[in-house]
Length: 135
Image (cartoon, rainbow, N blue to C red; front, side, top):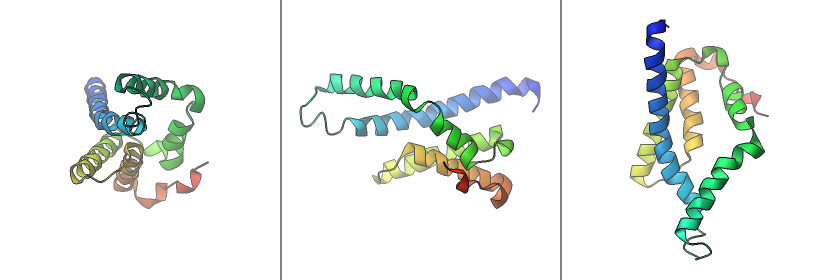
């Protein structure tokens, strides 16, 4: 890639990742407190704070195992490019919007894995499939 395009491409990918993350926060964070608020165990302000706190500290317990599995266990790192990342994010965004519109429950992380698999298939075909690489 041309060095003059590297920064705009990076900014674009970060923007698309943030667009993906917005519905993720809307759906997944709400699901984590869905039973606490109606049962009045916690008030909504405390439940949201509780969810935010535990979502933030999760990395302390799980470290980078999930990211490592996705980064090396699902797709061969040698074929990852900005186009593959963009395709994966756009596929995940489209899937989340479709399921949201139809009222079908779905998971953002599962949509992202599906997006990566679809982008990998579109770029390299079946030979780079590493589905047996899950630990």
